[in-house]
Image (cartoon, rainbow, N blue to C red):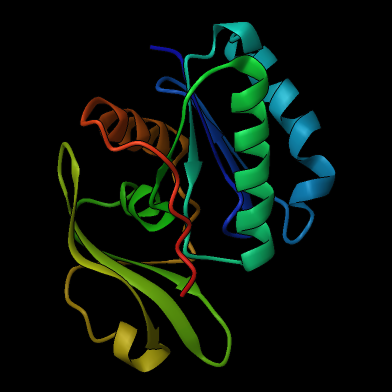
Length: 176
């Protein structure tokens, strides 16, 4: 299955397929660069738009505006291409960069972070759902801490494809 994944919930623009990914630090400039970056990524990955069968978008948590840019782009592309779109957790895709017990953290405002806990081996299994914590509380976890790690584009594609196969359709942005 040809899966295209994209995530703009963090300062990173993350693009991925099941076999390739690109992570670009864009800060708050996702909307300015997303379509050009996407075209360059697809060319590099050797994937034509008409070959895409599923679009996966990062559901957050993260920047409100960043989430909206990614969601609207994914939904627009899916509509134009006539393919389904499904969401996947941005923190789970970031946690996929670790192994074992992993707490994925993303800086929020006022010395708070978005946090979720996972067990990462061949799959990424959520053990504690995304929530907002103080920075001090977030650091009290055991295991691997991934703070502001960009989501993995490959992992996002895998997570979304798995959700799709399980019949879990649609996108549910996570605003904390």
